[in-house]
Length: 148
Image (cartoon, rainbow, N blue to C red; front, side, top):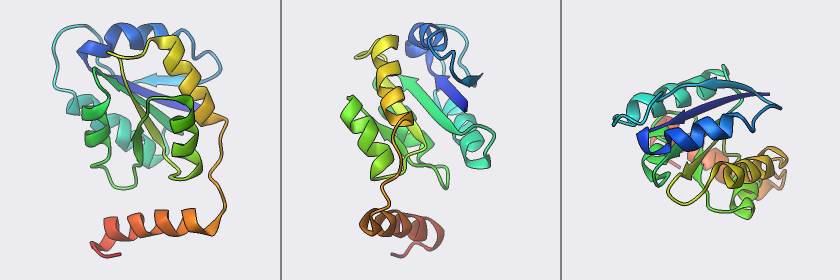
């Protein structure tokens, strides 16, 4: 499985340690590549575009809080980025919302905790219950036509 990963300066150290735990995946690192201050959209958008185009299967976005990356990634059509704080939320992000990027806050989680949440996400599948499909279809329809 191909995984894209992106971060800002506040998450650089956590990302570097996390990459060492992702041996089971083919990881593409979209940056940033140091602790020097950066503008996170420059890294969030390429990650989200790679997920959208199928260049990577799923994404991991990490900044100080996870909020900024989540907002930026969700501006890309077809992206469903969920900012999560637990394995349960990561699982539900896939089961109910068919998320394709998870956002994490490096201020709150270390690389081991992020890996556990990401594994819970990867090991989940989208729930085939029609209510979840309908809800996701409504989001996609609004994204396409601004109507639901």
